[in-house]
Length: 225
Image: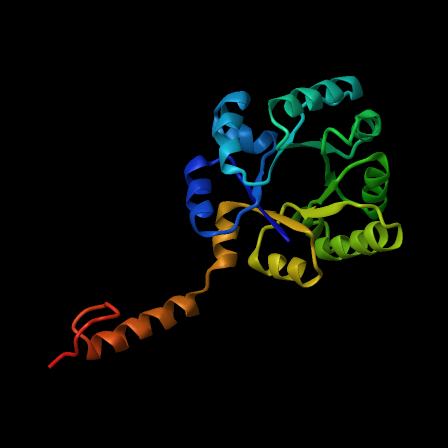
């Protein structure tokens, strides 16, 4: 399972990569806009923090422009996976791009058919928006499960599902239980999902018990008299 940080906040990313086995980073135009740093300058900061891949989204809505932007991003680094929305123009561009050279994530996916067509067009990652689907009284995790069953198991396309728009620890748990290939989380949901207050309580108890008996919090500490 691949684990990505969905953010462009450099300090938060650095903090998380210090203690978590993060595979990479994902960004989109909204995330980049909030960062208020020119894109190419920001990518220079994010690439060294991305162990495996940095997923970066195109801006254009026309096939030819999407293809040009995809090539531009790929030329910056082979670690960059180009995110292209699964629109009519986006799918048309994915179909024409040399996906053996440029790795593509089909993003903003909201149906099994979109996912299947994206995989058939050449995308290597499929990014369904879990929480946004939940907001329209459907199940985002169920869609991920259906994509996995249909696209990967039945039709056997060599794609990975990277669950995006994940807004709670509960959604993370559900996605892990169905065997999602990858998940991208905001720093806040990442921290919330990877820590537990009972773990902190247990460690505090161990420390308190030790300090009742020993002089110092050290393995070679002497006993208290």
